[in-house]
Length: 267
Ligand SMILES: C[S@@+](CC[C@H](N)C(=O)[O-])C[C@H]1O[C@@H](n2cnc3c(N)ncnc32)[C@H](O)[C@@H]1O
Image: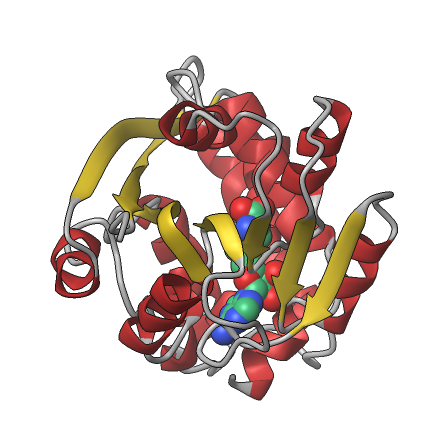
């Protein structure tokens, strides 16, 4: 894993801001967790691993809903694994999706939500997902559409580049909703795809500024960058002026994701 990615997920705050923004400012219902659960139709008894578990809110929700089977959160970020370990009944494991420390056929269900695009070799991770899932088990993967939220990404990139920051290709998505189904079809016999098309819509400056700030690390301006405060101040001014100059207008930015579900052979 790249050091930049490690640094980006050292602090869970930007990820939490992004999740909160999608929950509050999506044009249509935004329920990726429910979409995964609908697709998996869990009984609550499954041994389930969530790969790239982030702050483990998905696993915490399963516990709260009465899930009885073993739950494992896997992440390369020590901060995220520490968060997973605070959830009663959840085992947090520091590991890379490309090389997972589990026996063959350990899990009944495996989820990888909004993480596979960070993995340099997604095919290796898919092989690991297949290997560690029992015959008859299910693997559910969520990835974004290509160029998701392009308008805000361009805004952040423009402000970063005005301070001489070059585009950071280490965060370029290795897989997206256009490419995932074919990659999965190479590893699994059948793949079912559920698509969600949506947009972020901001009616005022503050939530857009907060969202843009949460993306700065992906655009080469991490929390400890010497120009971070200046970039953020310019961005804040720019967004505020845009809303002042366009009374009644909204900032709309298209986005979406797929949930792709594969069931392993029952042999
Ligand atoms: C965008 S966050 C998504 C977190 C969570 N799945 C969610 O949907 O809220 C991506 C997560 O994947 C983790 N991650 C990135 N590369 C990984 C890898 N190769 N193996 C395991 N986890 C990884 C990051 O540390 C981060 O916690």
